[in-house]
Length: 375
Ligand code: BGC
Image (cartoon, rainbow, N blue to C red; front, side, top):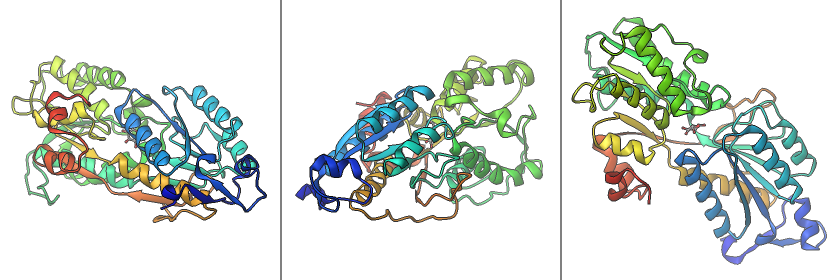
C-alpha cells in the first residue's frame, strides 16, 4: 500500500506540493509532503467528531499531513478556515459544508490553484469547483426514516411489507436544516414512503404542516426542534391531551429535542407507556441508549468509518494523479454540474438489532450503550 511505502507519484494539479518537494513537475513527493485540509461543520454533534477523527487517522495512516478544522456551525468561520487551508498550501480539500451554497469563492480559489475538492457527506452547490462527492444514498436514508416510523406504528413489518393494519393514526413531521442539500433528499425519500398512507387516510398530520420549509430545523438544532414540538403540542394537541402516535425525525439530536417536549407534555417516558414512535438518524450514542431503553424507536446507522475511508480513497486517487471511482454519476446535480459521487448504504437500527449492527461492528461497545456516553 502507498501508505506503507510512504511515497506517492505526484498527482496532476498538486502544484504546491511539487514546489514544496523541490522536484520538477511529474516527480515523486513523499506522502507527508501532501497536506489534506479537512473542513468539518461542527463539534456539537457526535457524528462530525467521529467523521473528523476517522478521516484524520486514515489519512495519517496513509502518510499524509492533515489540517482538520471544525467550524462550530458558523458559516464565516468555515469560509475562513478554507481560506486559511488554501493559503497554508493544502494540496487536497475534503469539505463537509454547513451551508451548501456558501463556499463558491473559496472553491474558486482552490480551483485556481489546482486543488481538488471532495465534498464530504453534504454536496456543495452552485459551483463547478467541486470534483467529487462521497456520501450515503440520501434518498434511501429518507425512505428508511419513514419505514422505521411505519414499522413502529405497525403498518410495515420488518421486511417493510404492508401489514394491512387499518387503524388511523396521527403523526407530525420534522425536516433538517434548509441550507443542507441532504435535507431535501431525506424529506423526499420519507414523503414518498409516507404518501400512500396519507392518501388512504391511515395517517394524518393534524397540524397540516407538511411542506419542507415549514417543518425544517435550522442547523439541525435540537432546541429549535424541541420548541417547534412544544408549539405544535400547544396549537394542535391541547398541550398534550390529544393522541399523537408518531413523529418523523431526520436526525437523533432533533429526535431527542422532540422526545423531551413529548415527555414534558405528559406522553410518558417510554414507548410502552405512551411515548409516540420517533425515528432518527446517525446512531448517536445518547439515542442508541434511548432505543435500547425503549424511548426512541429507531435510528439510521451510517457508518462514518466507511465514509471516511471513501473520502481517503478519493484523496489518494487525486494524490496519484488519477480520478476517484464513482458509483453514481446522475443523482447529485449541484445546479452547475452533476458531481460524480460514491454512495454508501445505511441501515435501520431498532432495539432488536443494536447488537448485530452497532456492537458486532465495533461502532459502540455494550458499556457505551448502557451509559449513553461515548468513551
Ligand atoms: C447528515 C446527517 C446529519 C445531519 C446533521 C446531514 O448532512 O447527512 O447524517 O444527521 O447532517 O448533522
